[in-house]
Length: 120
Image 1 (cartoon, helix red, strand yellow):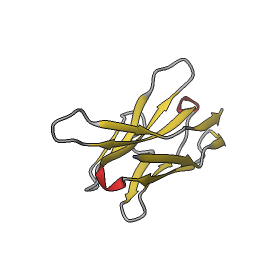
Image 2 (cartoon, helix red, strand yellow):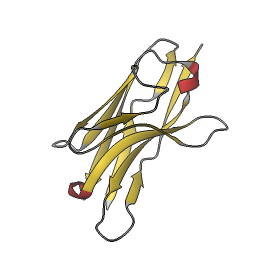
Image 3 (tube, one colour):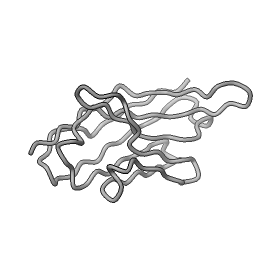
């Protein structure tokens, strides 16, 4: 089993920065990709950024150049540095971890979410 705990959310002015952290515990050796999703008011959950165990990254077009995802495999943590924040970044941010399996569907684990609010 894997547990994910996020921290670092809060209220920030437009143009400001926040750093989100996610700590994974449990059977972390089984995890492949980790990442961050968000769900804004009245919107569906969307991918923000993801990173593989080898360090390959993917970003949503809306955050490219502003957000940076990083991972520390030794500490079992994944961070999201968010710069130049915009009001449209306001959302609950969820940490995600994926367990790749050989012959069965992958398993996704989710954190409890942390609120990020960007004021104009």
